Image 1 (cartoon, rainbow, N blue to C red):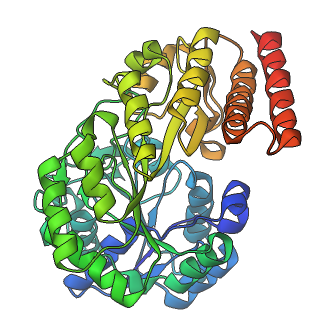
Image 2 (spheres, one colour):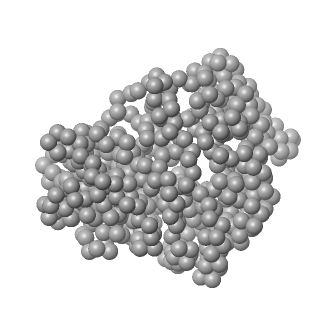
Image 3 (cartoon, rainbow, N blue to C red):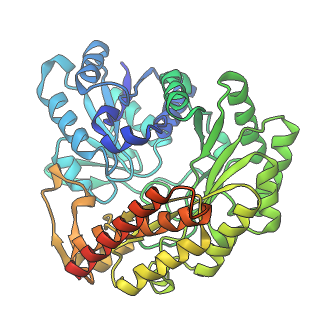
Length: 461
């Protein structure tokens, strides 16, 4: 008897990721694997990132697990459904029970169950996966396992929600030995000159941004003790020698008390590794920035989503755009890199809001910025608000929430051109800051692309 943990992300299919080559391990599955190991439950973990679906299926056929537990999200849903159908229809794989978990299943319960999944794990996976696996192999009632959904007598059954893990110190370290760590480190070294690994210090987010999904960890804030996180860094430093760490937490500096303890422990345990993190502007100040710099922070991603206060308020971000701008500028002045996230096409956004965003990015001057066109994730406040304004609702099994479109201020193509306008106009400004005579041809190309994008915006306004 055994359980096989896997996902359905294949790097060779992801052309966008291939252009940047910054893959990370499936940290959530590594936590579940470690938790099962803690209770002496035999488990295998197949990280499909560097392998094909055929290689994944060959591994499943070899192991013949009693249960296959698959992590699914927006990006991998289509592949996950294909995998389910193969495992449920081909005797070579022993007809295992199929368990699904991840953020996408919470508000698509019926769809995933009718697509062939036997049971869904809703919320955090460690405790539920253990209890569910034992119930399956011991043939006891699924009704006794909290935090799951399944079909019984053609009816979708949801058991009571599982209480979230309050004390994260009880969790073992993720089972990094179960995945090909060297492949990740080598790819980073090859493409970026330095390696990177991920660490999680918290679960949940106490904020209420309307577009953000809290399907797994909920609107909560739970933190691992600072000394344990520092110990994990010390272990990684000794075992893998990563050149950098990416903290995957939603708001790394939400607690200044925790950060001060972490600062002390990292120095005490000689656990400094250069790192980058995400946070909110109002949770940064001069003292916090100095603490971060002293323990190796080289880049801070500071969320804004828009340069328009009107849109920020519509998102329920609860932050002043000028506070965000100031936080980015202060971080830059301390010699740390900055990054920010921009979303266009949010309900109510007009041409003036796009202009405000360009003005904001030029003034803040983040080292990096990323842009996406807003899309509604099922279960979020944004989805509820635009549900009756959806104009494109593609087939669920062959699409993702990214493909859903809704009535916006302008045609969607306007916002496609708006993305190009923002990127080229802001990068043109960055070239000017470097000095007008350093790369005139590059400046000319950026400005030309900005003008052409602006013409496209006018065409589809």
